[in-house]
Length: 317
Ligand SMILES: Cc1cc2nc3c(=O)[nH]c(=O)nc-3n(C[C@H](O)[C@H](O)[C@H](O)COP(=O)(O)OP(=O)(O)OC[C@H]3O[C@@H](n4cnc5c(N)ncnc54)[C@H](O)[C@@H]3O)c2cc1C
Image (cartoon, rainbow, N blue to C red; front, top):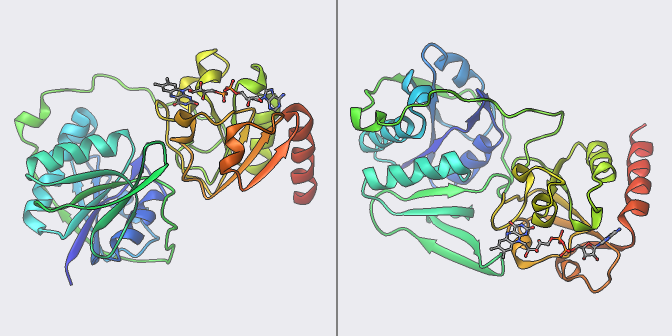
């Protein structure tokens, strides 16, 4: 059986559930080899953190260069692994880091690339949602090793427990891949809420909040959800730009997306239309976002959200 490489998704030293999602898609194609790029001396701990997903084996590479040279070093090593293992395909998480690594790897290995896939089939064809989610595209790479980035939360992960075979390899990072150096970095301030692009539930607020996100945040917290915002809300300075959902913000695909006081402009839909279930709270029954809602409440978010929060908390107690 052919092998498929996935780049294990570690953020801030923690394995994310995206690794299991990538493995689930990759297992349709062949035996899954998870590549773990770890700081020097931490390869064992990183590999041990991968306990779920249909993963056949893990290749661990330790290097100080990953922290010092970021995407350059990661892409260099991943390209060398591809040349040596000759996988049928390579799947990488479709976030900023993953897409940059994928682009560089595609160039280094003279391969085709597809980004932002929401699904990958056994024949290595990828599904993408384009034009703000209004069009579905199926495409296949015809040159080199298919390099595909897959949006977090798009694939329902097979979370079976695994104890994969672990192989430690060492590769030199070429000088050409060390031309940029990370001189300092600061971890994002973590509230108690999940990361927007990885959250199972996202509750977003728009211009309808009039700048008051208290009810949106309280409802999100009752559900253990991340908080998103429309561009109208972020441009007004009501919520940080890092929480913007949409064409020029983040793309989310949660199990549940709750849009509060958001009209549903095409640029906002582009970032949330692939959510599995969409709930809308808007006082205007003509708001276009109702067109894509699975469940809609016509009403004032300041009246609806506190009742919804109370209802959720009552069910929990
Ligand atoms: C190039 C470009 C890129 C863009 N990128 C993005 C992007 O990434 N993300 C994004 O979101 N937008 C983006 N936009 C902006 C987009 O076109 C819209 O302007 C924006 O999404 C509108 O935000 P909104 O829905 O919050 O505001 P509005 O369109 O003003 O809608 C507010 C809604 O709130 C409802 N409302 C008001 N008060 C209440 C209340 N008390 N209770 C319930 N409902 C209420 C209203 O009925 C209305 O439907 C982009 C635009 C351009 C041109």
